[in-house]
Length: 459
Image (cartoon, rainbow, N blue to C red; front, side, top):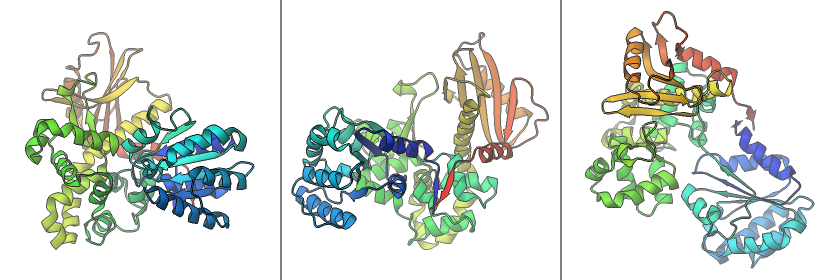
């Protein structure tokens, strides 16, 4: 078991513990991102109590908390009020009580969050606790805890939203594979720590896909359906919408035609997938943000996109011959790896920005009619534009010529701006770069990411 990165988040928790003042911290994000692993890493070096809200009914939750506190602290406990639990634990853990409450969003309808408010207002200054609330379901947490209507609104001292790993962290789990297979593997498993930890890098990518995803007994065989059933009230509708988006339907009218869900009803479901579960994103052309007529929807999580394209869409083959399904999925991976390569290029651009190699104020995709540029980054101060082509193959002079031709249609400060052209490719036949042309190969990107590899701790 390894603990990868999360340095910023762990530093935030450590700063809360050592601040010397009462801290009410919210750690949230969708499931499988390692939130529990993160807070347990903090508890490894700090004395505290870890509790899980297993029930959403008040009496059951309190009885369960009583049992958990008894086991954690070796005392006999029977709490009828959440305030009593917090008081007892805080007094036993002096001088710096540390209490972690996982899956706290389940307490939303129990009145226990109102009791937490009362405890905080009355006892926080005297007892000086660090109370960490850990929750899943982005939309639920934001509504229950972070909104103006929440009982603890205005009392939260720190908020940590946990997001998936980028490629720079994910590649660590695939260290025995070739650079090309690491990118392909990222296009399958994405940046979710739980999925990445299941990878056995001593096996091939195909063997991992077969064992983890295609095999009916594999831990990820039904993963997206499990998530949708746990987090939504109408999982079949959400499944149909994700099927539509995975198949290339990127507009509301196309999704409605595919699913049979009336177009006027789709926004409420899309909102849950986008804001509540963080599985879908709406992408705008750079400079057209907020204009719905130009937007497209796509599945944000790469594993969900892979699963809906290769498992859900090919159920017959997967159930009859999972090994063949894995083999055929791998044969199609280079088509899928193109999007992963775009994400990796954007991540590398962010690293170059951090290192001071380039400077930009905005970055995103850009398209107009039948013209599309993978990434455009603009520096509004210069003004400078970086036009980026991401080619999961070999780049040549024609690649550069096409990028320059497409860039001529980009309207921002035309005639006034400076321009730079950046190509990301597995390999290149472009012999020499100029002052305004840069080519990064896969090997060069890997070298940079290896140089700035995240901290790894063996647990």
